[in-house]
Length: 291
Image (tube, rainbow, N blue to C red; front, side, top):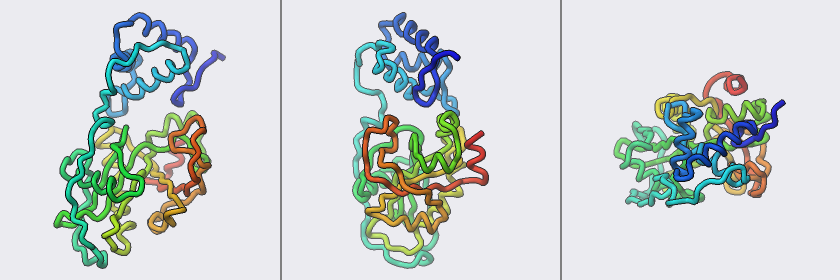
């Protein structure tokens, strides 16, 4: 069997690594940005929606550089990722109390706001000012939902982004191998933020809004990114929350994390254990993820 290296969840042969090293040497005048995009064209390396996966390619090249397997040119400028450098500008939000029964609110509207600048500003303001973890623009595939009254008053916000690279109880529940996980992780999403502002007190609002989102999430993801998702996960800090809204919405509680960060592949960063919840979006989700 040919020796290989596991990088970004994929086995790379030493021959492939040497081909990349020689290719980088042959283009000493290229920037890291150009190298990553040309690598996508050379292999090819594209997302399901047909766009170049240049951020993934850039991360891959950086890891080869860190392991001294290739030598990249010096950085010429800051990352061109506009979301990384975008400054968050908060907008005015009506925070007068909303305390009533769910039925008394009248018709409610659920918006996916990632392509809606006006409502997205309200969404970001709410998370930045009201959520205990704050808010930074997510990197990678994501969807942002804002629940509003017909008068436009925001009542709840949900953010979905990249799933955790590794989670023991989740991976055991799915039953997939490391190779299946690496191939199928893009079909999971993580509910990284959920917020009902403190001035909103409406019994049953959380489970009602989730039922609306659950019916839309697969189709919205397909429309935006060109592939479907099977499963949603979230991690609940039990020192702050009981997870009642997830339990009431028929999420499955699988157990606790092992006290590592969501994206920690080297298992070095220790964080308090959190409760792990998952929600299959369609029947036989586990079977499809293991195919």
